[in-house]
Image (tube, rainbow, N blue to C red):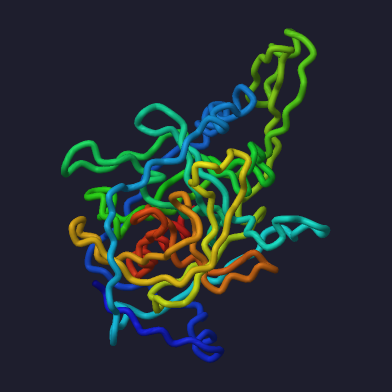
Length: 365
């Protein structure tokens, strides 16, 4: 287990922590795996899959299966220290928030759902969040929300198909657009061995589109429509115009990222609930919890962070440090990858190796 600093907080300590410009940790081997998802020429077909039939695949998607049987136990970090320097990447705002009353005023616009087609050929979803990057086009989520399980020992995981991200998704709405996955960045220990300590991925996305449904009056209009997906309904014909939404980060902003932090400061957990009573229309749920170190040595997972949460969050749900509701921004410092028992959420510890994977992703075009 890496050495973790004991908690040291207060105004001076927080100010010292939130600094920029930390160097990328040095490694004698390459750990970042880069995987193409959909080229620009394939974006239209990916969008057509999800937006056909009034978005029926989106409505019918089920939560992705997270790793099961994790028995994480708390571990002590007395006198411990991180394996590298602390560092943060600052957050960035998107377009100015609209004024007026909103029940989501203190919720991050950066968080939404990622959708994909799994190995079973069916649509599934996880949570994801926009994070800061040089090209304002990056989404963070759990590794198993991007890659399928390795089919055989020693083989490399393959990516899910038709991967998209919809920030602010609730009730079928796409308030800030739909963004198709371009390239995935992950840790080689996850893609080769399924290492839970490295169950994270960063996905660069293409410029987004804002779907707008239009009624087509007759079969001739239906045949002539070429602005996007189209489908027949019981009462007529519908076309879906795809209006440009621009870059993800320009639209919703991007969370910062923090790594090699002490474990003991409360984090804001945002995500979609997996509770049986949750409805497809339900939006984000949040909780503030104090994390602790955990491990499951039976699965060689010795670098986990855990929270006893008020809700069972979906895979990929972000854990944010120093979250400010008025801006909707903070620092990504964890993400749900599974549960231990009924209500203990688990995340990989955000260390220098995670930063190396993230750094490769944020610099890529």
